Image 1 (cartoon, rainbow, N blue to C red):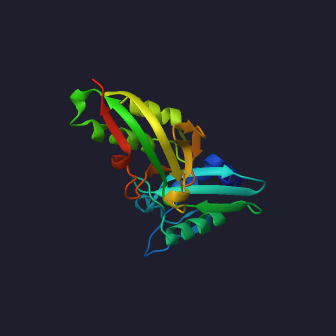
Image 2: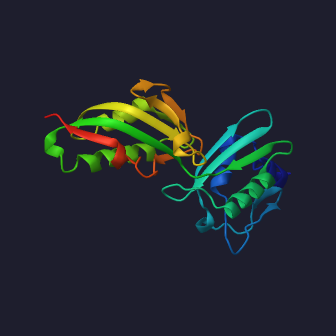
Length: 226
C-alpha cells in the first residue's frame, strides 16, 4: 500500500508547470539515445545526467481543447534546437504526455526587430553613445519573458534610460519571424505613426534585425543636442 501511494503521489499531474519542469529535465545525446522508462509506474531516465540537459527556454500553452503548444530554445543566448534534438524532444513529450492530448513542440530561430529612430544625446557622450544605446537595446531584448511580448513603450523607456540619452523619436519599427523576409515584415510604427503597440513573439524570443543595411548601427541616427 505504501509503495502504491508513493507511486500515485509522483504520477503525472498534467499541469503546465509540471510539464515545463519535465522539459527542462529533457536529456539529449547525439551518440547515446536517451530513453525514458517506466520505473515503478513513474516515467524517468534510468541514468540522470544533468550535463545532457539542453533546454534553456520553455513556454507551455494550451491553445484549444486537447492541444498544447510547447516552444523551446537551447543555449545562452538562446538558439533554435537542431532537427534531431527537436524530434527527440517531441518523442520524449509524447511518452510523458496524457492520452488524448496533442503536444506540438516548436523551436525556431529568433524573431527580428528593425528600429529606425533619431536619438538625441548629450554631446559629451559622442564617443560611446552608439555602442551604449545598442547594448541597452540588446540587453532589453534578451531580458524579455520567453514567449512574451515586445512592447513599444518598454523599448522606448529602455533607450531613454540609457546614460547620455535626452530624447528619442521613433520613426519606424518593423518585426518579423525567421521565415519572413525583411520586406514582408510587420510594422508596429511606420512613418512615425503607431500601428500596433506590441508584438507577441513567434519564436518566443527576438533579436536585432540582421538584414544588411537594416541593423541597429545602420538605422539609429544619433543627434547631439547639448
